Length: 301
Length: 64
Image (cartoon, rainbow over all chains, first blue to last red):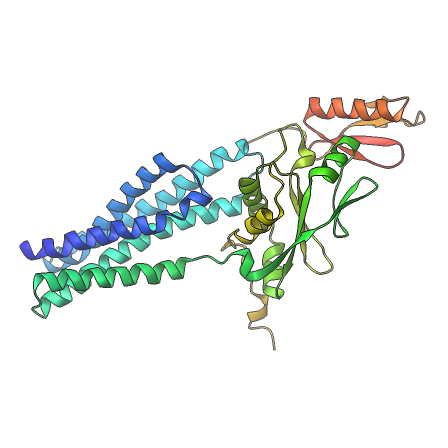
């Protein structure tokens, strides 16, 4: 039993460390800091425990213990459901909604991070066991295990890292003007604003951007409505918005120029800062579900 | 789920006296452009709708 604690304790610690390593990203996407942090850390501990006891269980010929892994998979699907439900529930209370595609993406990321914890713990325990098997000293076992764990963590984080808009498109400042009642940004119509007072606010305080996709892949990705909704939400989170529930005219809408696939968007922010707007758009993650790759289609000859 | 009338015209505010609604949509007549603008704003606030300009002397209020 003693040699198992050398396996279990370091791998448990590495798993928890992996969760902490990934949790930093959460703040930007889903700020529910104190309560969300505790629940996700606790789930992280459970995931780490599952990952670290898997190998010792097999070694002591407790094959039944593997069924626990199935239980774990179920558990983490529940994590995804939990995140999805809670974000869905607060969706009607957002002035600019996240959109279902963005919610799905966030929920999936939370699930994936728990699997990452299990994998990190498992790899750590396997490496510790290998050194043990080669008759290495306990300290060497733990050291090798920790190194393997850190390496796995960094590798997985690299793999799970999402692209941002900055990687697939150029973001430039746009110019707001009106053609009759039509709000235009760089000659693409966005919406019909009837009230002169609202038009005046747009002309005085509005700022706009144009997103120019770098290639056909980016063009198809940016056409996705969920992706555009995510951009709108992200921009609102960063800049604030001059809007209340009875003023639908001030909802930022990202419209597509059908001729060239460029996306334009105008917003009346709480804080009029062009650089921040461009940074917010560039920092928006490219949603997994929105990603399209027509350029690498096999049908292409 | 949010149920309600969505994406349909819920009121017409016009300067054009010849305008007659052929359906159940109410028509509000205004004498001046300022009055039209004001009525449109008030109806939009009441219905949480958005005012659109048809450029023929008529505004429509739509809930999106």
